[in-house]
Image (cartoon, rainbow, N blue to C red; front, side, top):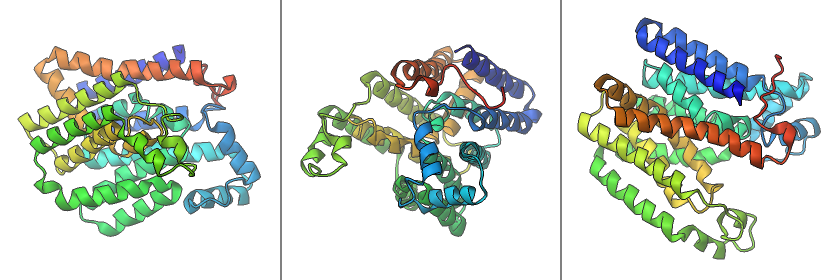
Amino acid sequence: MIFYILLLLIVLVLFFFSSKYPNKEKNISLILLVIFVLIGGFRDRIGWDYNNYTNWYLNGTRDNGLEFGFLAIMKAFRYLNLDHKFLFFFFSFFTYLFAYLGIRKYTKKSSLPLVLYFLIPVLFLYSFTYMRQFLSVTISFYAFSFLLDKKYLKYFLLMGLATSIHYSCLIPLVVFLILFKWGQYIKIRYLYVVMGLSFIISQIGIIHLLSFFLRDSHYLFYVSSKFAIPVPLMKLLLLNVMGLIVLWYYDKYGFQLLHQKYLLLAYICSVIFVNIFSESSELTRIYIYFRIFEIVLVSEVIRSALVNKKLWLISFACCFYIFPFFRAIIIDSKEQPQKELKLVPYKSLLF
């Protein structure tokens, strides 16, 4: 745990340095990117699926899968006779690189969004486990910027690449197109209503009704009340509170950056998805494709709170991000069945 505490302190110090010296913003952001790659890319035997990926690579047990992009990467590495550890570095490097490129496309004040990316467990820490999906998440995050710039070929090429790595990217592919087409007509007050309705749905348990239609399918695991694990109510409430704060802020102060409204719509989709599918934690993983936009939006809220000395908002943001970071590490320590794959102690190929 000491390692992660020191790592967090280093990340925060770099952010405060960039705040004091704005002309160093890009350099600090690059340093943060390098830190992420060093921590994630050179990790050794960390992550719930570490052994699965190793087995898939060495024994070819997933070579009949549908995700041809992932298969092509593995086969290329095998052809070059590379050690399986290169596979983990490859996925980590490009996951964090696309996150960085996406952030820089949406805002030039990139250090704070990178700090938030690091702190949100489902973005950084969980990338140690869900490697394919999280690479797909950051590619789609970057790709959305090209759709907003009306560079359609680049958008579809990147989204095609992301889908070839993890087919769940088909959902954001469609949602992004819907937001781009009709987002300009959506008022913020409508988002309050939709969020409220989706939260009510979350408390009804409507997702379990799907078990009647999927009774003989392997997807029953995701929707049955017998197997599915719900999202903790406190986590659900906090995600909705942050969503309301973000809506309130942009409703009151307006949009400062180009295309910021579309980023807001994408982010609110994450709250709606996690509400609707909250009875099954596995199904809520789709919300990560949209929650990543939070790091750009909330960074503006935090900067405003720091300038205007809104202590209540600063305190909430600190608790909202720092507590879950360490909670995720503690939960991993308690629930990870294989001791050697736990986040604590951190193990690296470098030391």
